[in-house]
Length: 249
Image 1 (cartoon, rainbow, N blue to C red):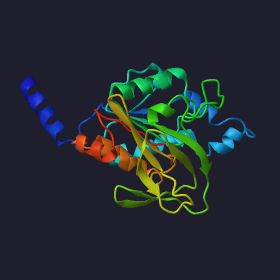
Image 2: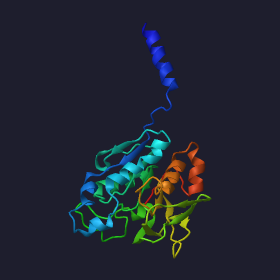
Image 3: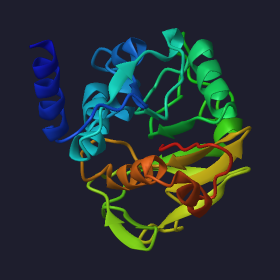
């Protein structure tokens, strides 16, 4: 009887559309949830214009569409031993979280970080150092001014043309990073994505926030490229090296 029952469960499991994968995580920060939505009249509320929970929710979209298992984690209290780490709009970047990301990338991890990330420290004070705060050298870029164009940005990425559904982007200034994609209709053709390597991992950084499934399409394409079977070819195409790496800002 027990053998028949086990065989029935195995047969049912084989018919399921997907098997859980434990290699992907999305970082969540209660501090960011609070700091990004201060009382009315605070300028941070005007700057961080897309609610944090909305950005986190839409970070799930590529995983949902691809039927891939993913879970939330707190960077300050987690051992990062996952295939892919997504950091959507993490406004507050405390020392422990930054150290966790740095160590994860150095050991070969893949990070996808979106715009609005690493702007203030654990005391809710704007960083006086290059942005993204505490991580600019890890990502090999400096985030500069931001724009709210009247025309929605268009992006050339991996041989395809993508149109964002948002009116916001950050300017990425490369340090050790290389360009992955370009805006095609902005005044200075600002790059929406940069890539660099750190230790055994690598990072790609996007200038768009994750505020809507279609606005995060470029980030989703990047995330899928890093997760794809045969990731070695994906890394070479995206300019990475070692075991993995990536980020969306």
